[in-house]
Length: 537
Image (cartoon, rainbow, N blue to C red; front, side):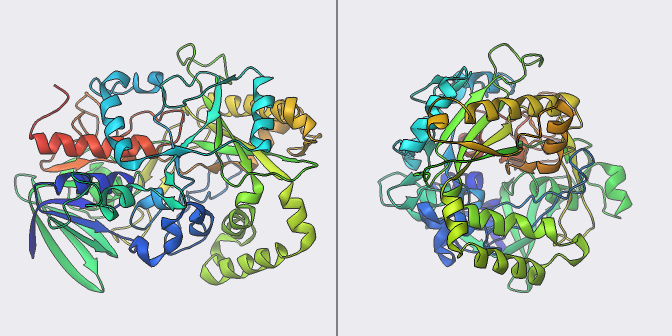
């Protein structure tokens, strides 16, 4: 048995920062279930994201339960399973969110209280914006013709009806994930990043459960590594950073969660916490596709816009509820099709590595055809993302085996307002595609198409074409109430010595992507732990 001051579970966007910051003056063990990033070089390059997306070694295979209000589809819910987590496989978007988003978080986590932490992260991360292209400027023109305002900096807290170029976590040809910035590059700049002498990283470690003593204090972690079981002891605290689909699962496997659910699986109850695994929500999205007369000269999803699509929503005035991403198909259409098509055409009972590989090979062959390449070169989408969902779902165990995925139910569109907003958003997206510079670009709508005009038809289209934006959150939501899963210091209620520092703790998602907020949660957690008391006052 090995002994450390702290154990961090999960080497993702938040976990790498937690481990790096704690290692400055304490001995830290970081357990990551996936492989080292260096084993998969595409996770370390700026243009490798499309290849990482179809690499099953770094992109975990998960599916939701059938979604009753989304055509009963089992929706792919994979996330990054590699050092750096989803920050090693995503599109590198780095957005702080809106001031109004954080007004919904507990006191101490409001916009003015977190800016210095974001700034500290960004000094290490060094995000950049990509230069405009002819196509992105045509998109800009079209959005401006439909009520959007051009914005220079999407990280200043105002995301009300704006469009601009996103900050992205890259530097020249390299991806700048939190793993790269805080661990891999440690020592390259004085005083920045992990103290590697204090940090032990074990990849390929499947955590089984947390160990609690009779006083409900977490004392260690049981995990499997290279076919052998191991136990690591934490003298101080354990921090769960495994993500919104794994952190709550590990707590439940350890006996912390809804007691009735745990007893049904014969898991001894350490603490009855009904909120663990509840409150799951996500940013669902649907595409509106267009074909232009000219080739799309862009290879990254770099142009984002935020809008108040549903004026009838109860959200505060001026708070955007949707995000419209201008997605250039030449950037990754082949890889997206290879990832998504197999689960759509292969029956669930027959879905697996062989059937998935067969469909992917067919897609790869199709994209070698000149006609397909020419078509894709002119294709783009306006991806409509529901940024402020009101629907809430659950995450529950499917068994006592840590190797089995949890039952993931985001309950898309269980709140009717979400579907109403998406229907309105499809109308706005198609208006943008037929306006200004995009009209001059020769854009012609392909999906949903001219026959999909009525609200009923658009609703059917939204239900059938909904997918995730991989922004799962809320399964261990922070709050000030006793029934909330974790307190504002990210400590799990009902037990001692455990914190959750990842998107699980987000009570209400920002309208924007969650990578930057996840890093924020990790950074602040580490600072609170290093201070030995709450930095929230």
